[in-house]
Length: 204
Image 1: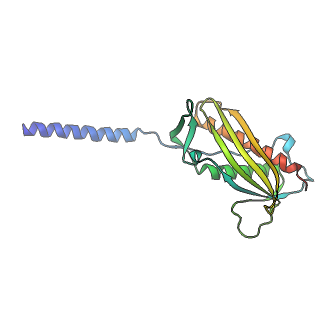
Image 2: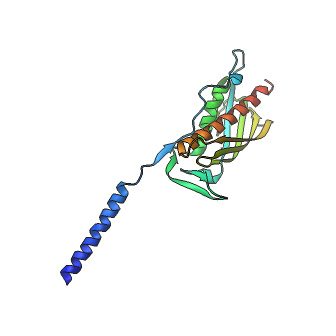
Image 3: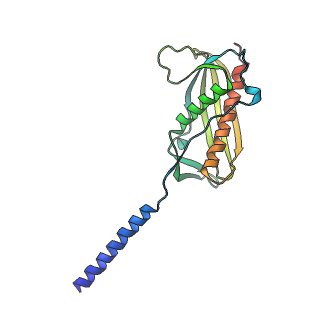
């Protein structure tokens, strides 16, 4: 009787261990994504040869807490938010966003220098850009939306010279996270173009 009980317990234990082993072995590996920058400026935005080059400071840029995490967030039904289990940002979304904004502005404008908040030392800046992102999310196979308040300040930060709330929507080409992030990148490109156009209208 004792031998039979021992064999049953041993069999159950082995079965549990095998289940854990193969369950772990079959788990998908995490996939990592990042926003991409503009390859080339739109024809209307191409910097001219006689355009004065400027220095820009970016920051602070703030994003909602629900977006400031590793797992990519998508919209569900109603007010539901879904966190992807295996699809994640390769870095903090805010850091990725700031870097892409900088790369886009350097493509759209003639820039001498672009620096990030907080400033270190005495850095000559012509304009400072501050931003509060209200949303940057969407659904797989649906749309993504970017809403942001942004302000342009004088180089010393004492005078606001431009302010606007921008909203952009882009269709997600497929029901996968790569398509979602590509659409989000396009909205950031549109926002960058709007900021660059505003800066071009400011008195030099």
